[in-house]
Image 1: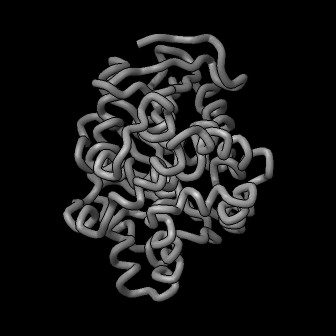
Image 2: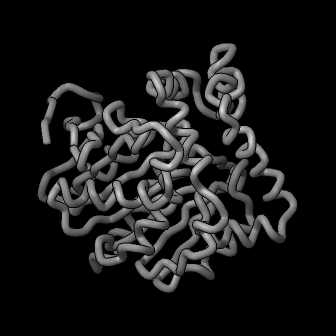
Length: 290
């Protein structure tokens, strides 16, 4: 593992962490002796989406770890959709903990990071004290919602386009016009920061491989989450609707809380970091008996 002091102003430092033949860019904040909290970003974002949340968690005394995930880190960008299965992505989370000598952590995930987080927390409950899912419903709740709720089926139609072989070319065309329209709540400067990373050679196609590699069978075999869980959901989320949000509790066999944020869409960490950080801290404090 190599380290560099240069990086984002809000992070204590950035470092690279190598697992087998992949090297991940990891931002950190807070004291080394704080309770570890791992933050998993979504699409089309990067670990930069966590800056404001990470600062609040660090101020509360926690050790924050925010990787750029597989495909987003330039030295962890293998070719081929088969390298972006949910098994590989969840395995990266466990591998990062091991490489950082972290026995257990609190886990937080948004969007694709949320899906990865559900799989990691459910398959490896011994490695996580709590899980906070942001925007992303439990994968089986999503299957239920798609089967019963036409509006949820309609909301997922964009995924078909993302799975097309030339999707990256279309999304980058005309100064990212298509992708900007899907992220119209994000300030231009915030979107541009994430887009700069995705403009690196092969990065956007790698990020789209998450969609190409994932299917209903992956979710169908997933059991309940057995660690204390909070689900933070924006009532105006364009991707994850109310049906899935309210079905998620059926797939958590542990203390559970749904935090519904009114007048809030999908980009919670970028646009509403204060209530999100408060929900994460409340879940962590309860786990520590505070």
